[in-house]
Amino acid sequence: MAARTCLAIVLAAGEGTRMHSARPKVLHAIAGRTLLAHVLDTVSKAGVTSAAVVVGPGQDEVVAEVRRALPAAGIFVQSERHGTAHAVLAAKPAFATRPDDILIVYADTPLIRPATLSRLRAPLANDADIAVLGFRPADPTGYGRLIMKGTDLIAIREEADASASERAIGLCNGGIMALVGNSALAMLERIGNHNRKQEYYLTDAVEIARGMTLRAVAVEVEEDDVRGINTKTQLAEAESVAQQRLRRAALDAGVTLVAPDTVYLSADTKFGRDVVVEPYVVFGERVTVEDGAVIHSFSHLAGAHIGKGASVGPFARLRPGTRLGDGARIGNFVEVKEAVVEAGAKANHLSYIGDAFVGANANVGAGTITCNYDGVEKHRTTIGKAAFIGSNSALVAPVEIGEGAYIGSGSVITENVPADALALGRSRQMVKEGWATRLRGLKSLGKKKA
Ligand code: UD1
Ligand code: CA
Image (cartoon, rainbow, N blue to C red; front, side, top):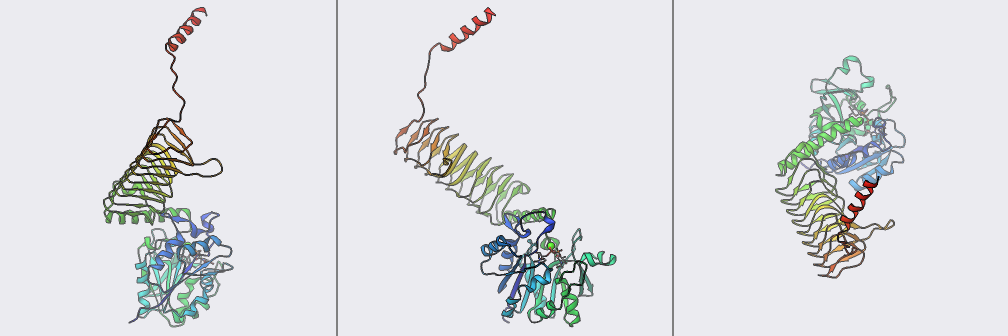
């Protein structure tokens, strides 16, 4: 039998009032990725044929995020927010492709997994016309309740409209629904807004289906798959679940996390084999760590590539554009940004390396600073292979230090240094013999007089 085609509709038009934020709810992030991008990523891995995203009016940033995360998705604007069923109908033109299944996913439910979406669609291939993801949350406040009769789902009651006995039901609506394509529009277009909020509730599709002698079922999943995010507290709870999953996946792939609960990962963090991550390390977006590298405690990395066997930290900060070659060493209190540090090069203590190239096996001494910013523009520093930069040097960019050159400690380097040369960029030391003895003599004379 040919695989069933599927249109996924992602609802992202809500304002997210309960987040108390100027940012649209679906652009809040967990594990370094927006809620919307998590959902689009899952949808794209769930074997759907096409995707449509419903956004609110004027939500340009949300549109931009859809284009970035899933360029193939159609974008539809729900010009006024009249509820979840109203939002689905904003994507009505997408129904024209006549998909076998329609999957409706809320963009504020980021922990959903591809396998869960496939499980939800499975009953549609048998005798169900609607399938809804159900779960039993520790705290059901705010969720719609699933009213069952045997194995049939007969209605979903929103909390605001539920009676006391309906509120006592523990089985809740996860907000993700699959409908058989050829009856979906008929169901959706019958939904009215006769409820407390005067909204068109997608959840009413269930009772309507029964009226049309169609069958609805619930597919029960664990709470973590369908946690909805309406508040900052729920955002933090979802972050914690996402972190547990990512840590678990890293451990299962052979990464050594000495204290997993203290390491923060991004959804896109990539590790090679035999990587060791010490306690208290934060991985922002776009970090790749190759085989055998060690990330020591209290380091913060983002947009960085760490070569094989390299060593980072403790207390290092690697910012976007950092590329460390094999065996490179970035030590304590060193910040690196937009810089290539080639194989075997070292900057072990207290440095800023920004907009720079550090050649293989170069040694950047303690306290070296690349002065990359003149107050208006950024400039580049190039340090040649095996060069030696003495401690406490300031390299004033744009500047090039030749291969194998030697910079004396405490230098301020403003001009290029040829290969294998010595450059001293500091004033000569002055010595006055006996000067201190004479000073002490003068002081003790003064005291006697007083
Ligand atoms: C919804 C469900 C509830 C379920 C819960 C699961 C309805 C009526 N209720 O409640 O049964 O338990 O999710 O998390 O569906 N949206 C739009 N346009 C609108 C309104 C909402 O696009 O006009 C989008 C939102 O961006 C959001 C999603 O739809 O992604 C759900 O809306 P939300 O207001 O969060 O619904 P809940 O009250 O959480
Ligand atoms: Ca919600």
